[in-house]
Length: 250
Ligand code: 13P
Image (cartoon, rainbow, N blue to C red; front, side, top):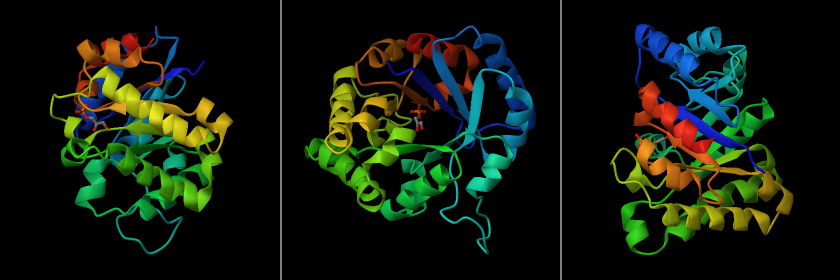
């Protein structure tokens, strides 16, 4: 049985004062959940705050991006080792909000994935199609290509220590989540694709769903066989809504 995993992606929201409140609300409300693992991915400057407030709690923390390089003259970049310095254990990789805005190629994303693993961080790899691609019926091809770059460069066994998050781009921030059936079908496809190459990596691989998850749709989505949790944007900024989603996972 894969333990459910619920990840908060705060994106570029928060301040020291707001985070203090939100993290203490999380700490008040979430420790009763013994059955789901909870992770908060904060903006870089707040990693120290997350570490100070969450260490020795059941809640883990992480970042929303990292550099593809280990060290060097890369102004503005943040390395995997730096994230580890602040106790991060997860990092989101290839989120579509970055991949499009900052022209991240699949190769770049694959390199970041390996940087994360090489430093003991669990990568949360985001994959997903646009609305045009879904309407054209090529969504599996698109997601397969996103996974293939990593498989080609590093093999399928790397998924044993990773999380994949299926985030259809049309569902992110739109209030229009994928149906439980649409999501399950893609999750099954992803697991099957990894299983064809490495059955044991596929069996342990956590596949999250992200895109307009809320307390109402979480119950159905998280009950599906291949949906191992959620990557939550907007609703993670409200401790009560986030708690309800975590309860749905538990
Ligand atoms: P929303 O939950 O706000 O749609 O964001 C989803 C997301 O992008 C999580 O990474």
